[in-house]
Picture 1 (spheres, protein in one colour):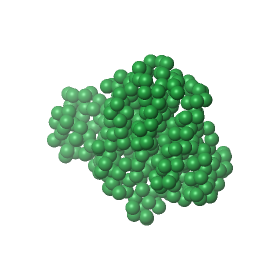
Picture 2 (picture 1 turned 30 degrees about the vertical axis):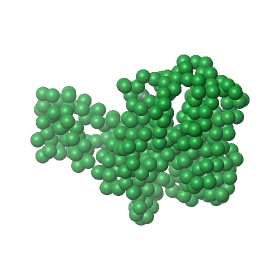
Picture 3 (picture 1 turned 90 degrees about the horizontal axis):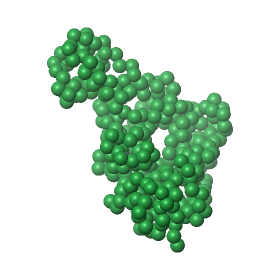
Picture 4 (picture 1 turned 180 degrees about the vertical axis):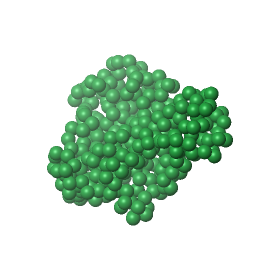
Length: 351
Ligand SMILES: [Zn+2]
């Protein structure tokens, strides 16, 4: 990705980020991570993370820093650390607690007609469907969590961050003291990596039976028996059954490092995503199915401020707030300006 270093554009973009952060901080919409003095922060302008190992003594210091610097990318650690600003890994930082979060980050879908790093309604819909699938199939049905036990955020690009934050303080203390092997086990379960077809567990049994029914596979034997391998091996359509199982196991595009890595950073909720200019936006579970990032993750003021531009290269179309833009567009709102800038598109602002 080539970033166009046109000073005029960089200045304008910086001003928009500043304007945004003044608004969210004034209105208390920027996440102030719990136990902020134990969290590490990272930020970036032209790269995702130019710098990390930053820490703040309290929310005031943090907010003042964000107002002053208005970074294009802003992250906080999932972990709580005794020495968050020390460099050199988890041992030096002395991690003593860690939030549990999932990161869904999808690729282009078959319906997408754009280049790899662009977005459209289809891949954004796929990301949302995967978030709902993770929440409803695993976190709710298998783990017994409710919508109130989860914190859900649109990632600002093609994904969602789903934090497990049980209302029950005792349960929360237990899961936030999970070490790497326990977090790994959780991940492996969801990705079906430790699925044993000779002795299938109730969660995966329910999930696969649902899929079999949709794909018109006879399920009577599977319902009664836990040794599925024995049944499948006798079936004429066993290849089809195995491929359905495989497809189901590979349904979720989860970034495994977000669960594994002890010092992983994740975007601050309420920040802007530097590639898209979209908000990293918290969504209540009940609102998730109707959430449309191309409208609902756009800062309103950025739809009302316009620029005359000349776009000097061919680009895929982008639909923001129901308006379609492409390289022939002469007038674009700030929201589109940020998207083009973040994607390294060659354009100029005409004053
Ligand atoms: Zn797409």
